[in-house]
Image (cartoon, rainbow, N blue to C red; front, top):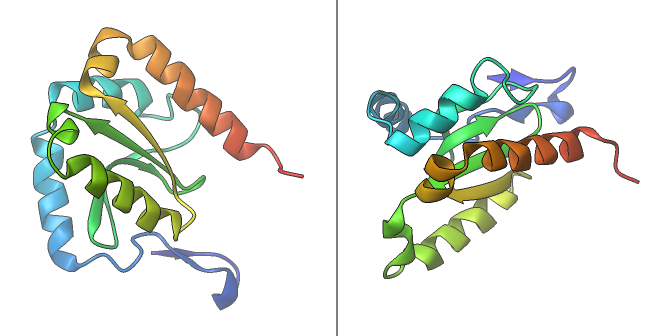
Length: 135
């Protein structure tokens, strides 16, 4: 899907995502973690003032949640992200997504489950910041 008035303004919503990722993303939407389910209930139906999609393919990645309008990705990470090469992989992934001008905000499962209100405040702050014109 593309948006914009002319070809130079078009932005690829799925940024060259492989078709197989869409099937996997569909499966992941059916099997969200408890933390992802809690956050989805908070942000769905424009709970942040903008539309977020869940399990959204971009390039070779699937973002837990994505706002195309503001190019914001939200990742909810379990403890597995603290082990082995996972932290390095997450950093690399964030850099790759930055090439598409996508801002990534990360939360742990524990943060979402224990303080969803604070998580929502941080997301709303990022949405507000992203909407305001930059000098």
